[in-house]
Image (cartoon, rainbow, N blue to C red):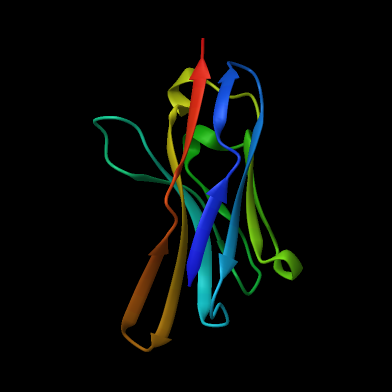
Amino acid sequence: VQLVESGGGLVQAGGSLTLSCTTSGITTTLNSMGWYRQAPGKQRELVAVMPTGGGSTNYTDSVKDRFTISRDEHKNTMYLQMNSLRPEDTAAYYCNAQSTPVVGIILNYWGQGTQVTVSS
């Protein structure tokens, strides 16, 4: 499974960006996909996650009501719509896909990351 992010950039506080993550390879075993971010000097944190088979999405508290995760299966693409951006949202954003090909085995796939910078 290969993941390629796009859509990062520089935006002013209060602005919006949409990140995209295009997947390729064998994706039928994926059970969830999500977005993580890592700011300089900080640990990578989960931003949003969604099950591939349908179901509820989950967001970290700081982005609730501002970010929306979605997926277009026909385009093999996942999105993160980010509104009302804040300087503290500045980070490298990573696409993640998780599969469980065999019970007890969890595989994580990562994109290369895309930088989001929010100026005050």
